[in-house]
Image (cartoon, rainbow, N blue to C red; front, side):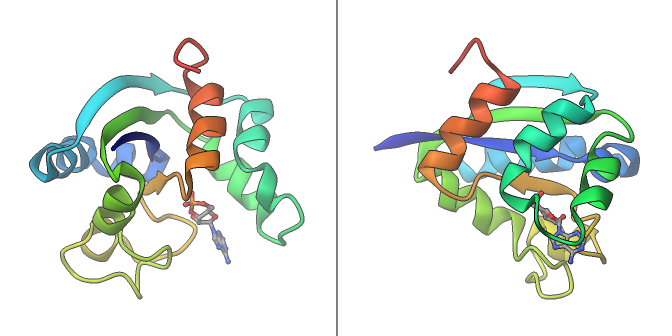
Length: 136
Ligand code: CMP
């Protein structure tokens, strides 16, 4: 069964010039792009996207960072797309992410870990609506 997930190449990934690399890995895996857009998030959109982290000590820093520069938002589709992309991304903390994964290959710090991928079908539906209301 096909499903959709929201993928972000966060401002650090855009700045580092790895947007093409991330897209290439998604395509090589066999997943399909359904939507793709460069977006510079407002504080309001960033807070909505990361609402589940509002109580965390790093929330302010997270919102500051994600709104600091443009990111690339995508909707990616395919069988098990949510888990498949999270496997491509690797562990949230780049120093724990396997070499060969996006974070394992391109990042060093948890706050600048290049990509975001939805973690469940409910999160995917909620996040896709935030970034691509026309697909919701
Ligand atoms: P992401 O998948 O975008 O979802 C939440 C983000 O919070 C996560 O990736 C990390 O970039 C960030 N994050 C998680 N833990 C920390 C932390 N301890 N300090 C700073 N940022 C964090």
